[in-house]
Image 1 (cartoon, rainbow, N blue to C red):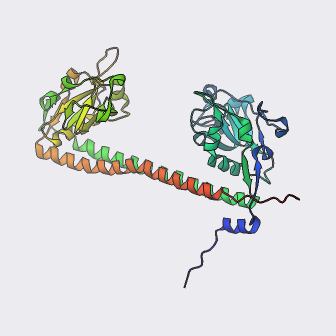
Image 2: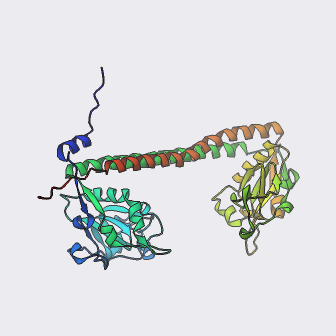
Image 3: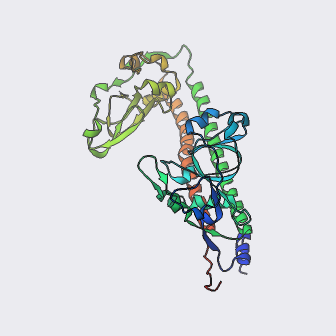
Length: 410
């Protein structure tokens, strides 16, 4: 027996309330903005709602973790403040905002908010009749048309929108129950996407903590393990390094490494084989925003910002990589004008050297944990991107309507 496919609530609402399509209206007919725009005909803006605004730098001077007033910025950064600090800049409403000046795509900085807020230099819209247009529906529709709004921004560097073009965009206006269902679906989809990202990040954090626990235990040795200066267990190849200026680089297939990883791809190489690179950059060694030591293989070019070490075996190279990334190297940094890990200081770093079988055991165990962490770390952005693409696909479908034909005698 063939299964009869049930219509979703949204499909039912559309079939019942707007089977022949929906009215498309220019945005100026259904929205109120925060100022009268020079490029817009006055009859298109019979009403405005003015909101006092602060510059971004002044906005975040108000930030308080315990506040309940939203800092409505023009960028991705947001925060909270208090009514007392907000003072004369305190606003209230249900609004949709685009930045007056931007350097990034609108979809990354367009915002919806309902409640108390202080705003930076945003252009602020609100529905002029929420029985006809929901503000949250307006937000999702503008988000879905972010690329079109982007084209209305002009100028070099910081761009500003031509508001006449923005206000003349036509928005489909389905009946209110249809708008409410679309908002409900998209809210749920967004909530699930955010929850998934939070779960994956929490899992990655837990795996990383577990890895560090086992690493620290495996790298704790007694007096039975001999300690040697690093120069005694590897060959330093720093003399072979060469800087290559940006203007002199010729694009090619060989990776060009610096202190934190690949800088570029060039047409020539210096090294060919398996090496361990150790950052010279003092700031990097203190901040540890990237690994201090990392392995490379194959043909490559290395500049003067990373030390190059050669080992006899994979196991010893990996062991030293793990060890250097686990210890505090800040005490080995020179105190020169530009602090760095000099070759002399690097060579003197004491490394515990257990017997080879124990080295292999430690590397095998930590390699497995590292693969688990990397699997999540690499899969996290891919999974989030896939969810975002799926969300954008369904958002576009939900906000695409047939335009209702209007009879000439109406």
